[in-house]
Structure formats: structure tokens, C-alpha cells
Image 1 (cartoon, rainbow, N blue to C red):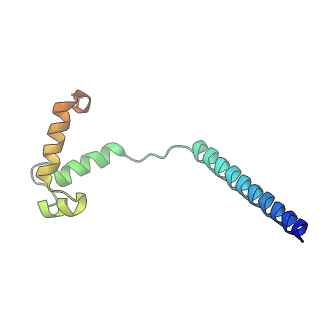
Image 2 (tube, rainbow, N blue to C red; image 1 turned 90 degrees about the vertical axis):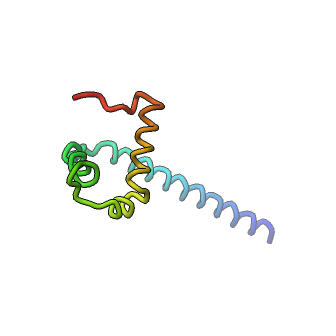
Image 3 (tube, rainbow, N blue to C red; image 1 turned 135 degrees about the horizontal axis):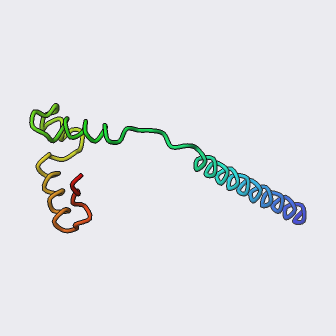
Length: 97
């Protein structure tokens, strides 16, 4: 009886290993496919300009309340964080165009 049990457990172990290897292979194939797809044009500059217009320039589109709901912090806090980061690390200072 023990031999039958041992044989059954070996089968289950092999099945588990095979399933794991198949999942690993599928994940690797999906990763390769994701790397091969072309980049999509996302209009980053337009999005940046719209964000500035909506939240940060004179005559902004959204209020302080809207900013807080969208970004989960007050606009003043965000601007203080930006100033502190720029002061601490020159890498984050925007260079003139």
C-alpha cells in the first residue's frame, strides 16, 4: 500500500513541476512579446501643457479643492515638496529650453 502511495505522490510532484515550468515558460513568452511591441505616441508634451494649464498657471481650470481630490494633497504642499526637492538635488531643476 505504501508503494502505491509513494508512486502517486511522485506523479503529483512531477505534475506540479510540469505545471510550474509551463507557467514559467508562458510568462517568459509574454515578456518577450511585450518587449517587441512598438511604442505608441502618447503626446507627452501636450499632456504636460494641459496639466500645467489645468492646475498651476494663472486662470487655472480646476480649484484647490479639485487639486486636493485629484492628487490627495493641497497644492501648496505639492509646491513646497517641489521646491525642497529642487533645492536638495539640482537634477530635478528644470533646464531652460
